[in-house]
Image (tube, rainbow, N blue to C red; front, side):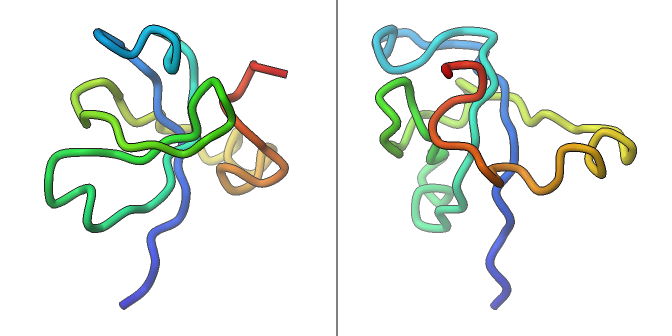
Length: 85
């Protein structure tokens, strides 16, 4: 089985997780097949730790081909949420 690539997601909700997630911020999602079975996604949060959060908290960020080529694969050179550093 091929591992899924990291991807970018936008936080659209953070109820109960306000210290860990900032609404409208872009995060790196890490593949987690077991979490996905339970409707959860693994992202690197505000503390630079990867945790599971409800899938409903995020919307995938689809970049154009041009932007993808400029930025490279999601997560390359990133530690923690985008924009936190």
